[in-house]
Image 1 (cartoon, rainbow, N blue to C red):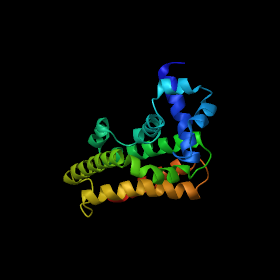
Image 2: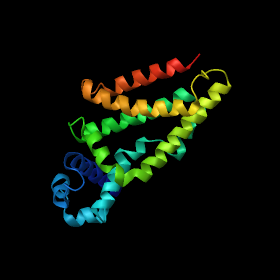
Image 3: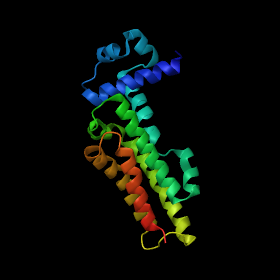
Image 4: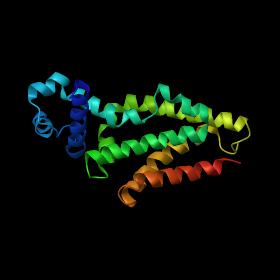
Length: 195
């Protein structure tokens, strides 16, 4: 197993433990039991629990939010931009489902960690919003998209709809159907914006 594989495996075990017990409730000994690695081996890959926490957050949450390199989807159009974000969210839900059977663990964890990762979340959400605004403006200027809704409002509604639908689908849909519900509901919203 390569160093990268071992780091990803440790981050995966850490995510499951953080989801189930929270950051404060997860100890290094818990991680050692879950991974089968010694204390020295864990510290070989991560210098601290905080560094491991950051790796788990990046691997399972932040990587699914738009980054600087995701502007390509916005260039393709509003639907491609928003649906790429939906697919990212679906990927995150799938990653959490692999880590724990507790379908609501993500939402509890997100609320608990938001103060710690607020700057990273804000940066990614600002970028996502800007990409949606730019895509909506281009399509409005081309006459493809209704002008009845301001591009900024479209962006805010899309982002709220993704997170809100994800939450509602998680508590009301059958396990595994969250992604289908998310794609369907956001897709229908987008359909209503086109002329």
